[in-house]
Amino acid sequence: MNHTVRTCGTCSLCCKAMGIEELKKPAGVWCEHARPGRPGGACSIHETRYPICRGFHCQWIVSPDVPEELKPSKCKVILTGVQGAGDDQLVAYCDPADPGAWRRGAIYGFLKRQTRRPDGRPRTVIVRVGPRYWLVTHDADLDLGEAGGRKRFRIEPGPDGRPVARLVEDSSQSGRPAEA
Ligand code: SF4
Ligand code: SF4
Image (cartoon, rainbow, N blue to C red; front, side, top):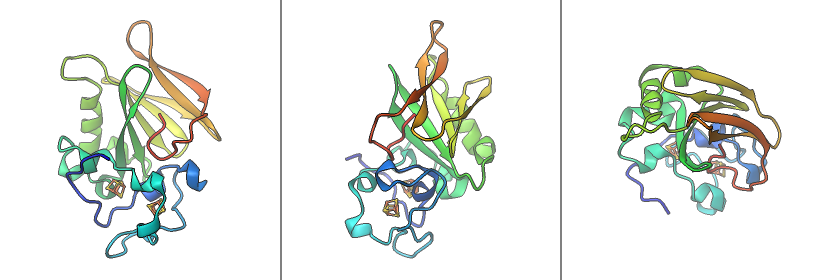
């Protein structure tokens, strides 16, 4: 289990913005067990919640490098890390109720900074709003379009090192922990 540096409090955005295959819950729809804003936690089945929920922590929860102001319930974006093809990728899930939130204020600057590693190498940064994907680079935001059903975009380094997107069939069962 990841070490956590913060607690969710009244945030429950991942119970809405992210798809959870094990629960047959599409991205952008509240889980039937969610009670947003409920004092003491938003999950009405917290003690018996699913392993996939128990094991999930967004980057705001686990990383002191993510600023306090980027709490998902405030900025409307959930940051997750995922192992991609040959690199660790950052996948940001934006609340479909506010689909432009990822392009505003501090979260946008943060996403842009993440496209470069400290040593200068590029890092893959993906934004998802429901079924729609964007590939974010330091100088552009590329709208990849939608990947419905079990399709998803796989982002891989191209011949020149810049990321290339391919639409693939998703065979994983991992649902919630960010499928890039
Ligand atoms: S998005 Fe992050 S902070 Fe919000 S409920 Fe999920 S894990 Fe907690
Ligand atoms: S069961 Fe999982 S997705 Fe549903 S409200 Fe509880 S923690 Fe959120």
